[in-house]
Length: 119
Image 1 (cartoon, helix red, strand yellow):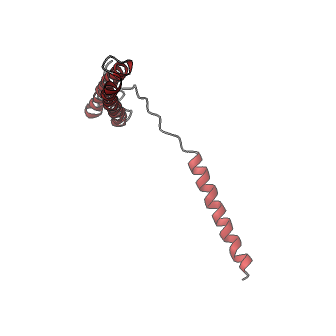
Image 2 (cartoon, rainbow, N blue to C red):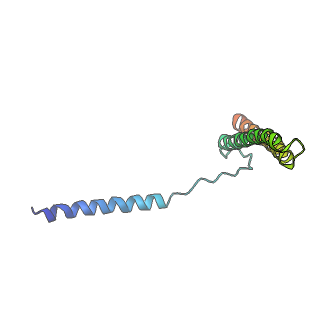
Image 3 (cartoon, rainbow, N blue to C red):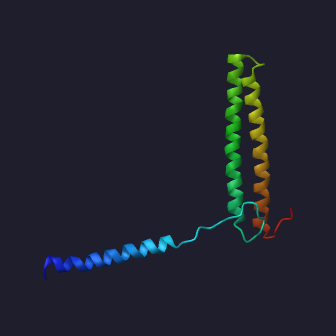
């Protein structure tokens, strides 16, 4: 058997495998989660985890802004707009993180009990 005849079937097999992989991955449907839904059919723990991650990010931003406010106070004085702006934004992030934690708790409760929550 010549080398040309041995490589032709390998190329055909390789091409068929590549076409199969291309077709199978292209046909997969992404999972869509309704983040506002309290339907137990949705992945409530995934929704709760998302809200907790977002709350953590906001708490970190709030802490960074609180540190910035202290630095700004040393640089520009306590009455500076930089200081008050950083403090207000930090407070906003804290409040927003608390709201996200409440949402996460509500979705986690639905996941635990399996009962839909009324709004």
